[in-house]
View 1 (cartoon, helix red, strand yellow):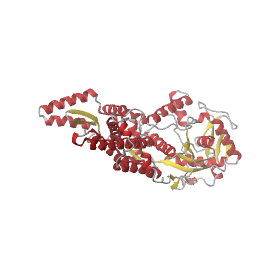
View 2 (view 1 turned 120 degrees about the vertical axis):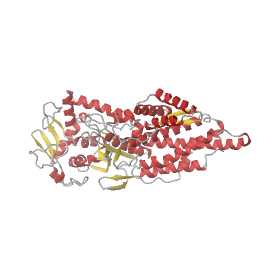
View 3 (view 1 turned 90 degrees about the horizontal axis):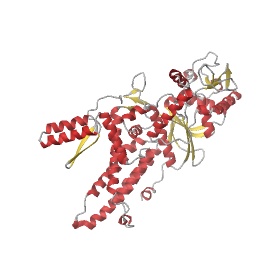
View 4 (view 1 turned 180 degrees about the vertical axis):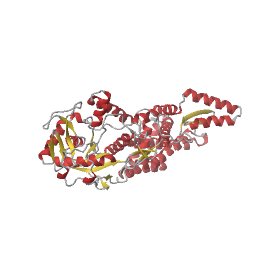
Length: 529
């Protein structure tokens, strides 16, 4: 029924902000109905941090929306498993570099699964694509854009006049690449390494220039070309990759193949912590694992979707608490709807052809559907959906549930039964539409609502450093205080728990608890505290 309601409005054109043109552009794939997308992945030498979560949740939403629009998407996200940082960490641990990076690749995949990021079509690793990398380097040399020196191979910046068109950087601003030391053997200090000669204690492979390993930038050019050809639709990553990584990618890809072209370059914003850049040196660096130890992964995902993907995200305990509370509200609402509908599902009278959903429900569903298409098609504005249209739909669901809980009066039983039938059908359709929205945003849980709510409560207990028994004891103590008319003690018990993020709710003669945003939350950002 929801489909009939929303099919009337024409879909808006899908627009994405292109970092190359510095403006939003209507998305038109190179091949109708098909999309090729490459996103730069992690350098696997440690657990992934919330900056990684920000990037890959953002591109997961893009992946989901493209599929929602009906595109057949080939999504490639690589692993850098050969790199200076990996080698340094492996040497410190006395571990094989490829083994270390392989271990952290698997840990990363666990984090992505927790955050409900869909698996890409391909997840290539550098160590598995050395032949493709060597072939591309050979082609660049053959085309006169690179040169070998003592087993190293450098890209010649002077051979690529268009260098800097993505970032706006000129050659004077090129610091020879973030991961590349200045070398006096270079023809231009800005030239960057395509191949590094072997050094003791480092992984290496045979090549026409001697044993060695790839430079950082060449891997993405070679692997994107291998899986998507030299021309494809979308290349994405964090804003920190615009220069030098993506700038160098463009140069070497075009040097290898003059027809090389990426139509849309997309970049997500940075993560800050209490308005400061996230940094290990500042002590405000958090891994995904550290955050999800105390907060549900869907709370972290909701938090990340609460800001536009190109905007900076300011992580704070208060903001993640608010996101966690929002997630609890979503699934408690859906569970209440599920419970309320249990006695009505499958009944013949509900399938009566004369039955229809209410006008208010139709409008609510239409507004939600239209808002999804409008906001998502405008460069993926997820934040507005979470803060407006979805909340409106959840409020309507709660109101409908309350209506169903009222028993029909005998004098007006027939009329109220008809109204009840309308409410049931409205609730079923609205619940279906909300679940579709949550699925599109990657927020629809794989578990039951009850199981997710239980997990959210367990995380809240961990943060509060309490047990279920502790809270039940407090509820009993408060009940006794109220019985004794000691309302000061009763209020104090409730307030003490609220400070710890535990809300007591009196439902008739019963008192239950749920997580809440801690009252007077201190400005503390360390999730370990």
